[in-house]
Amino acid sequence: MKAGRFTHRTLAQVSLCGLALSIIISSTALGGGFSLARSAGMAGAHLGLAKGVAAAYFNPANLGLSSHRQTSVHLAGIGLNLTNNSFSLDDYNTYTGALLTQADKQIILGKIPIDGLKLTADAEASFSGVSVKQFALTFTGYGAGEVNINKDVLEVLLNGNALGDTISLEGMYGAGWTYASVGLSFGVPIYTKGTRQLAVGASAHYLKGIYFADVTRVEGFAATLATGFQGDGALIVHTADGGSGFALDFGAALQLNEDYTVGLSLKNLLSSINWSGNPEERGFTFAFDTVTLANAGNDSVLVTSEFTNTLSGFSSNLPSTLTLGIANTTGKFLWAIDWEQGFSRNPGASTKPQLTAGAEYAFAKFLPLRAGLGFGGRHGSQLAFGGGIKLSAFYFDIAFLTSGSTLNSSSNKGARFAASTGLSF
Image (cartoon, rainbow, N blue to C red; front, side, top):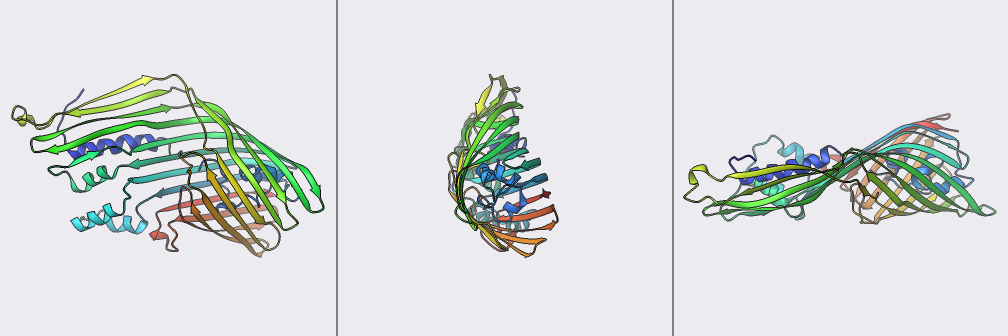
């Protein structure tokens, strides 16, 4: 136990630190090919275009289509994402380090939704991969973290506390995980007539859990009374630093003719990671009493306790998603439209449907340029740009995406970046 002076700002800082701990140590997009820059440059619309190794990330059934089989070697790829739901780069440059007036503070608070400030951080690293005929083998690392900070807490950080103020910690949460995957994918044709072909496919993944953190309980309040402060609260986080599991993806693809392909993909239809490495429950509680004449000389006394309990192993599931897509797959001008629906809200996933559309134009065979738009999902409106270099079998692709639907990147509330390289024959 320890004691000290208490203010609402203290409570705000304690709350932020606790939630930040759960995301900072685990914020390294869950599997979806975000590290493949060709798809990122088209805002992720790639279900019908993915060939070779890329098919393993988007729709394994594409490996069963004769037009999408490809001998390819994916050397490396990385995708990074940082977003929030309130502030743009312009806001950061305007207010960071500035002496804030009361009007500035009101503007800042007005940008934060009633549900609070949400921060997300995602990364995907594709280490290597190879595809031959109807099969593909991939090695990938994933991570995602998300934290939501109560607007009451942020208001106290900016304005301090006043008589009659009551703040609540309700609505705050944080979670994150990192894991690695080894995936084996295959596709088989089940119907062929002329240029029309129907194929089905599946991917099986062995998952190695690296770190898991989930804030399972955040509660508390603090009130400023005429006689002083009073309140209490608790923060509890479940953590683990290792585990293993599996995931299964399924898909179907229909080549309508030489030019158009439609598809359906179910990612993580079945999945589980058993977190058995040092599973723990970490907790922090606080309580303080109203100042009275008897203890006025000591101000308010904040009493805190911290504890760590060993847990038995627990399991978690990766977020399942359904994606439907159509694509024009031939010619200098290629395009794709995808619709994705998630079935759970987790770090790296959302239950909000997402619609993406992207295009690629080859001004020259060695210089493809890409652009795309996205709406809904975790990132809201998105604008994507990308390009690449293709020299014989070698390719290098790069992409940049913004969240916020404006052409001015400094006015957007997040950014994503991807780069990848490999060989395709």
